[in-house]
Image (tube, rainbow, N blue to C red):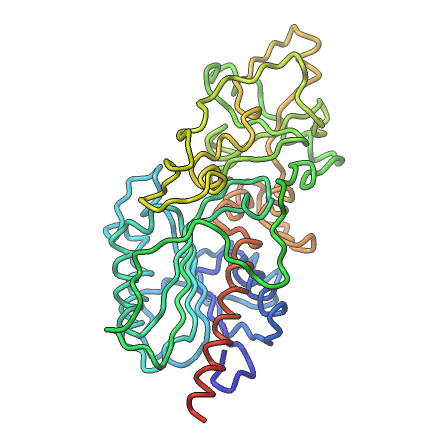
Length: 406
């Protein structure tokens, strides 16, 4: 927030369709701080159209790399960042800093070092494995040089009771005038549990997919998956959800194109209406059980965690093993004809990611483009939770600085 605490000025970098905007709005309201989105930045023209359609604000179109430090210095109290994940994802080439898509983040790392008035708070989201990258090291070096205290998290929406296992890396960096680079705390530690936040109850039980699905509409039948997809992948384990399912895999940019490999599919009837439970005749394929047997073995990158945390972050498949199954179809089987499979709709995906019902896409954006944009977005409930935690810490820090200076 600004030095007088009157207004939170925010830059949204790599803004996409505005998930970070919605998260900071929620967090700021809960903490009681007014905020103003000063500027959003993104290179994707379609994402920027969606952003404008929902927020009435046109993000700055183009790459980050040509921008100078003067365009950032002292202009915002908070930087929110969700840079491209492709350089670091386990399913990609993992070119890291050599990937051209990492150039924008690396340029910002250089800019941070040059700023006379850096942001009070910097927040970054990316895929797990980013924390092991050279880009991450460059970011840590830049933050350390500007007196930031850093907290890092690897957490997932399922830890907030949302039936989705979008495990992601998050960095919270808060700048203190009283902290010198030599006295900055170490940045090697990593937390794997949600921090406690006033006014936010963490549900004891997992939610159901049925809380997020659409149950009527002619468009649902358009989402039915062609049977040939399953005949070509007879031995593939699909993540098949019904209304009663308690966990689903991550939706990615390729959803709707990479059958079964870019997110879950939904068990439904011939009209695309979701089924409440799995048919008794269908057998779940036995998947591997937990990878650890005792609490003493529940370590993530050397850190001892609870068995529950380990399951949410590492052994995500055990949260609901019923969903993994080979799909066998037969056009001659009347019973099989009554059970179909479809993709989740864009609206259902938006709900899982925490977008409000009023969020909408312009008519010119195709369903495939909507899938890609949502798959590249964030989990708003997770980010809002972490931002509320960060803003509260900022307020405490500023109160302490004010008392020390009086």
